[in-house]
Image 1 (cartoon, rainbow, N blue to C red):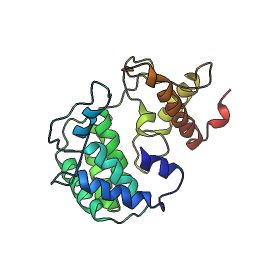
Image 2: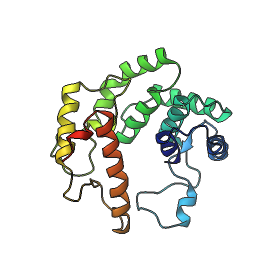
Image 3: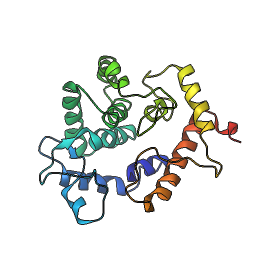
Image 4: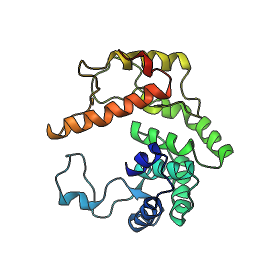
Length: 218
């Protein structure tokens, strides 16, 4: 999350970035990946789905999107070499990803420097990744629509523009009377609902801006 914010601010020259890489190196598993969640999560209130073993394995989430962001900004750090190798290895064995895995893969493939290899892997995995997308605009529950996978124009040709336009129209129509957007997943405590609403609203506005649709807001 911190690296995403630095990306939004175009602030990857901050000393926080190499410090973050040093921290990542301290929690990385021997195969080069960062676990999805660390055992320290047990020490504070947390959502019920944040569970982990005592010695969790490395995972594409969050390793792949972190590596993708670092590559996007041309960061060099010893941690990134091992993380990149980890991501390539996991992609080679990817069979039935969930939506979060698919979004992580796209974040990595969008920015990893070896573009020939990235595009080849994208072509190979495209149908598998698309299998995690929900196209039905009225589908209930914690589903993920095309704009969750392409919140801004992507270097990877995942969706045709007419499909994106339809979902941008739906995004505009989903704005609440208060002017924001909410989450479609269960809130484990009502205290976080307002916080998530603010975060999601900012992300939705950034998506509309990226596609040139911000002026269409009422």
